[in-house]
Image 1: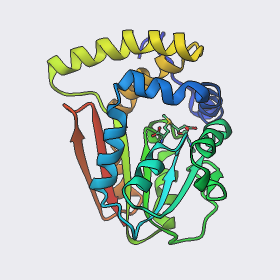
Image 2 (image 1 turned 45 degrees about the vertical axis):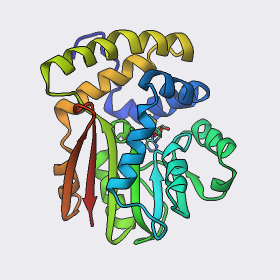
Image 3 (image 1 turned 180 degrees about the vertical axis):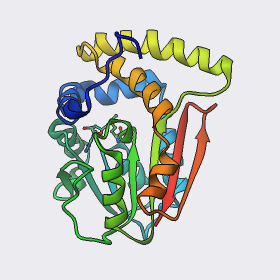
Length: 236
Ligand SMILES: C[S@@+](CC[C@H](N)C(=O)[O-])C[C@H]1O[C@@H](n2cnc3c(N)ncnc32)[C@H](O)[C@@H]1O
């Protein structure tokens, strides 16, 4: 990583990430739709389908933000939905978009979940895990609060391996996205942090390995859209 990289020191990550999402919350949904040309919702739907979300699912959407995974899950027929995020402003927008989540959303960190063991059948995290300050701790919590046979489904960006796709992706991610992200959100670095953290995460984090270390029996990676996104599903 060069000196212009926007990444947070381990001990500052929790507060800095929280501050960043509190700050960009009002523009978050608009920028998501614009900068991904709407494909982000297709990825959320695909994640829920790969995890076999259905009317019997008890879903806990962690790092739920403004609620787009939970909203998609409801469209797919999931009735029991809970959400968690440590950003107050992201959660408030979720409640504005979806009255039904009120009382079923909690402001907590993924690394410390104040919920009793074996409460859920599915935990989802979309574009959140890269921001966690302690992924092994979060995965241990996921393992604890999932019922036996429950699943955890992670949707996250990836660096594509195809050299042509990778070159286009890097150009877009490092030039166009930070420019419009800064212009519209007004945040100086949030949309530079996005590509920097994806690159860093891709180099250093193996989600399948981390799930196994947290005690999950199976963990499988699925590649989406030329490898620019991935879904990892792990089973308890
Ligand atoms: C890129 S947003 C994704 C929001 C939503 N899942 C979506 O699909 O649009 C990342 C979210 O993760 C939350 N987050 C990051 N680290 C977290 C942590 N350690 N515990 C709880 N929430 C966290 C942020 O506050 C933010 O709302």
